[in-house]
Length: 240
Image (cartoon, rainbow, N blue to C red):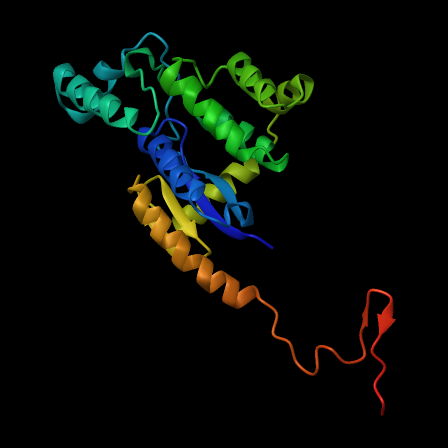
């Protein structure tokens, strides 16, 4: 059994990508990294969003927030610079506004095949770095194939409603837990971390949670551990 870290995230959330990288930094220095399982969950920041390939992201956000385009560009320029420290290349000027629901269905499919981390990374890159339309089924198929999913199976999934219920379940679970923003991390079903916090905070929390996990999941021996047992080619036979 592994210690779980559950992560609620949306593909179009820049802080989700930054949080992913900072969590990975913390885990890279954790001696029991192989005993930790990351479980990705879907979260929809804007369920009603429609794809708008011709709309500039800065103009879109400025209009939604009642601000100027210059305001939107300045805050995203700052994000781009900050993300470089996490090894992320943001290109907000290339970003295509799109609904992420089908991308989340692809995430659920990848997760079912043990490729949750891989699909998250590729989708983040597709949206933030390469300016791909993550609502486009051709793009999603390419992303799925790139991480090892079969093209025919990805296309079949996208053309139907497969994994829709899984996305909805994740969203509802987040709501029931009071999660209103992402990224949100739950470590060992006990510690909640909201936002792209520093790697040091992730490391501290993981270390604390691991001690509790070990204590809860370690065996407690009763009786004489060396009596009436066979080891190698010999058996210890009790005298009475």
